[in-house]
Amino acid sequence: MRWWLLLVAKLALLGALHLALILAVNHFFPQDRMGKDLDYTFWLLAAHILVFLVGYALWIDQRYRCRSCCSRLRMPLAEGNWSRAVLFAPPKLEWICPHGHGAMRQEEFKIGGGKPDVWTENEKDFWKAFEDAWRKN
Ligand SMILES: [Zn+2]
Image (tube, rainbow, N blue to C red; front, side, top):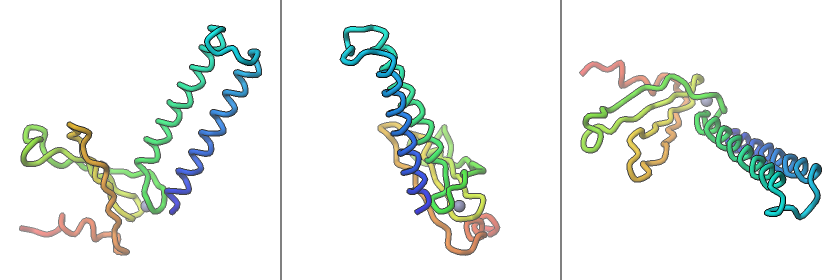
């Protein structure tokens, strides 16, 4: 729930930034100049590109946040193998929440779009995600 609230807050911030930039551009130039005045068109394009870049940075930040507590995910663990990428063990990265809420598995081999990130929420036991690493085979 906190993750969604943070996303909505970021989108509201982005919308406010977009509106402020458009109002600023329109404040300095007379109305109805799109396509007629190169300066106006350039600054409007620059405002849109800036909003896009800020939105992309906000989305990348949001993507690597815990779905429960919104902390930054940490400790990327590489799995798989690039030389066997197609058939046996496609390379993946697993990120974990520092507070133990869960882990995000991210495919690194993205031909054809790849698979979306998978968030796995832990049960209440913080160390449960690491139990397999402690077992001896
Ligand atoms: Zn967390």
